[in-house]
Length: 188
Length: 188
Image (cartoon, each protein chain N blue to C red):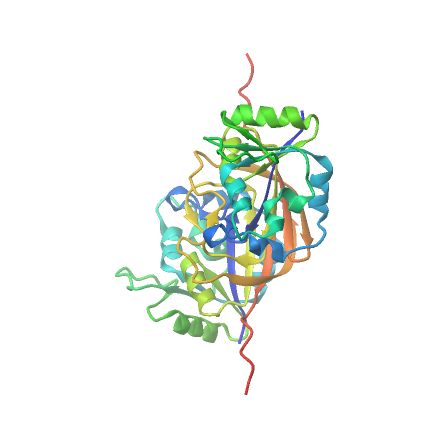
């Protein structure tokens, strides 16, 4: 089974979208990024939340924001939602189950490749269920000061990470972490 | 006149304190840090907000949290507050003016050395007044998920930074930025 990776770009003050879900600020930091290339090289499926999906489809959103990885990914994209939209969209597969079955479905599609999570709510639910292996964050050099926070809702408990790598690429800083799993109780 | 530096440790999800202002999580990442040594070597004065000051004095707070830089700094510490507390504290100087005069007072005390800002509100007010030159953030490998956010209140407008350095030190990642000043309107 492949890894589950939460992949996100955030402002230094922890916003993942600006006011009115604005994502255009992200595209001010273009250019090749070895960590993104590495994600794409190992990608097997994307699991997105409904909000991430809708934000990508908003009128006026830049075309690059409307497709995962600016169109560089053409494999399976799953969207977890409470209610499947009436308007069909052949570019994605909607899922309505719980977070564990959504991840299982994405992992089945991905085989031994990576499942990438898009969106704060999906990521939080996966983190709290112990389903995330890795986090890749691109920190953008801006204090947005308003918008959509990485976590709008509280976590039940802190989640410990292990720093796994840092790389400055132009104005972005890539931070890689592994998620620390709670130590299982001793057997016996 | 020396630089004004906002120096802060935050969780990856942008919290500067945990639930109930808990700061002990910060002390889980001890050890020498070249960027902190560099701050101390150039430090001239600290300007803190009232909340940062009170958090350091909370009963049960670890002794290291009660003194700036764990006691390594014995120079001037200014605390900006609306109302000077009744209980005297010879270790700090209380200021009640506006943010500009507070920074000017700290800079006068610092001479050509750096004024370090502690606390989110003081930092936000200074950022919005265009008074901050540099930001040094230590990103801790944890998602706190609750507590005191880097910015509780919204910024009037995004503040652009310029990435100036990145250094991984043990489990912490030091991110250094310069604050981009708005381009002045053309003369004439």
